[in-house]
Image 1 (cartoon, helix red, strand yellow):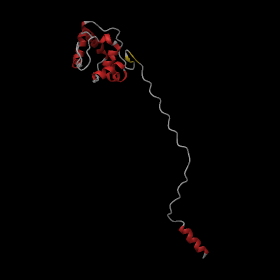
Image 2 (cartoon, helix red, strand yellow; image 1 turned 90 degrees about the horizontal axis):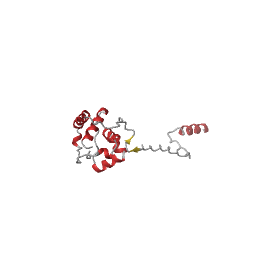
Image 3 (cartoon, rainbow, N blue to C red; image 1 turned 180 degrees about the vertical axis):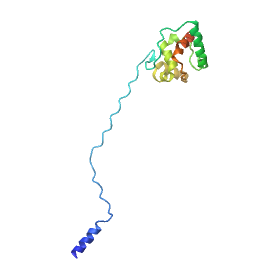
Amino acid sequence: MFMLNLVILSLLGCGDAPAPAPAPTTAPAAAPAPAAPAPVAEAVGPDGPASIKVPEIAAIPTDAASIAAGEKVFADRGCGGCHKFGAKLVGPDLSGIFTRRTIPWVERMISEPGVMVKQDPEAKALFRSLMVEMPKQNVPEADLAPLLAYVKSQGG
């Protein structure tokens, strides 16, 4: 009889009883990953961000052919829709631009206006005053010098 009771108890112990809860562990929490270093802001000088590569134009051409080619670029790219000489329209007045800005700054503003507005203090100030960002016109590098020649010929 003892053996029978032992077999019955053994069978009852094989039921679907829930497993005991695991013992709590006291392992330390994982330390948070160190923060990535903050990106270093690019130094921006009077010529704008150096990361914007532009051709080095030492002097703006003054010959009639360059000015005529620049006038065509100005018209073809729709620059006159926002810029005038002697008056502010949507964009700033271009009269005297080369007395206020360097040649590389103007080139960079034409080439990468979005980058300039984010990084260059002067471009940021223009954006705040005008509330319009100049659209990128994709002016080829070869057209920059003639375009600047035309702007300068008009009092820029």
